[in-house]
Image (spheres, one colour):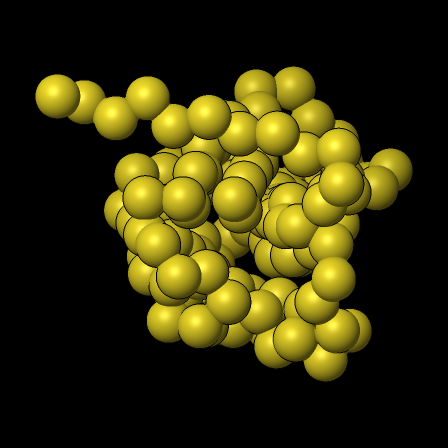
Length: 122
C-alpha cells in the first residue's frame, strides 16, 4: 500500500512515465504516510483513445489515482493530493500547443478487507 495509477493521453510526448512514477513515489515516501518504500506500487497507462470535452481543440490530461488504506483524515489526504499535483506539474515540460489538465484523486481501500502477501526475493 499505496497503489498509484497514472493515466495520461498519448499527445503528451514529453511525459516520461518511468521518471514521473519515480518522482511521485518519492513524494509519497516524503509525506510520512507510508513508512516502507517497497510498499509503494505505481504504474502508468498511456491512453491512445481519449476525448476531452466536445471541441476539436488539442487537449490532453494526466490523471493520478492513489488508493490508500482507509482511516486518514481529509486534511492528510488533501495534503498528499496537493503534493502529488505539484510534483506532477513540475515533472514535465508541458507542450504549449496542448490544453492539458492535471488531476489527482485519492481513494480509500477498506482496511478490514484488504489482504497482502510479500514474497521477498532470496
